[in-house]
Image (cartoon, rainbow, N blue to C red; front, side, top):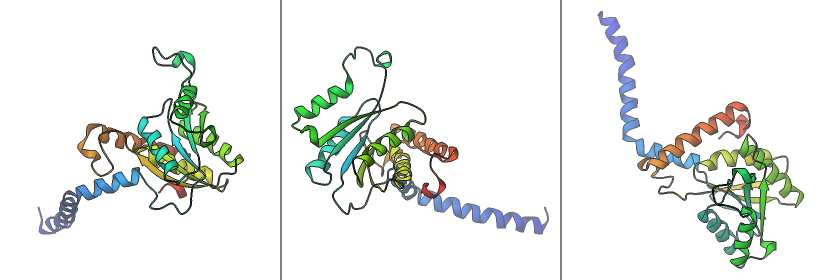
Length: 223
């Protein structure tokens, strides 16, 4: 190998080694920042929000409801909207016969909430699910005169939900404030130490990239 070739390889390898050393030494910082990116949270909410939106699936977790109730009791939001996906009776889990949205409403009433303090909204279960659900929710809220909304979404799903809601809310003149809710055994600053955290992070990052590739989230809203 000639001296010139050795110099070229040296110029290529040395920067690569330096980069690898930096990445390794800063790996925890990089992972923490990745968690913060996928689970964004508003640093401050300037005014009282008209509603706090709890983004559920076919069901809603207790920690999500607790977060919504916290927003109400602290005065950060005037009303709570629980979003559920519509499922047909044949797709319900085994032994579940009751109307789940009605059960949620009854449980909230049992907790002492007045009907005027919350709404259980059922959206179509149709692909792309997050986009379809967000559009239905925001169109309804816009008709109700909502201008400020806190969006509570589970864990790393928050980034995709926030960008979708943000994109759809602009023409409706609605301001969205994101708050991620972690209900598993990890947070945004230690997710790589827990199996579910790693799987959730990778899965939601893939779904975010898919939404961007399909144009469901315009590039100007992709950060």
